[in-house]
Length: 112
Image (cartoon, rainbow, N blue to C red; front, side, top):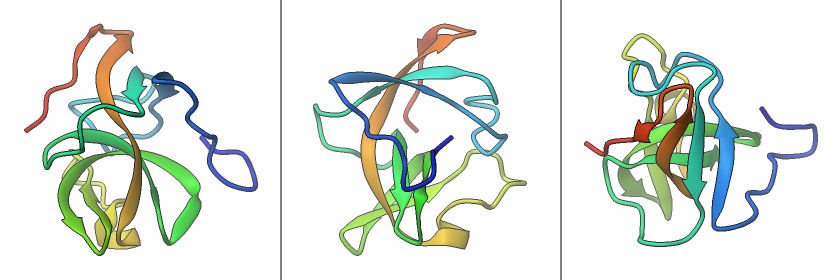
């Protein structure tokens, strides 16, 4: 998802992002396109977010915020069989909050 040299910048109040991989299934699937709000209300536990792990600054990820930790967020994927989240990479810095899925199945992304 990210070019060499770091993740793409999220520019603007609403940014389209393409989901890759199975880690957020069944909430989001590979190929889904989501809208990410880069401002607005603060992130809360249960929100689906776009973030960068501090240990993997080249990788932009879509995960669920679990809890604030060490000035960032502890993140988990919704797919219990995939562990490419904070369990593997540690704390992440949130870049924005996913507010809607617009392709291929429109709808709000629910917080837990």
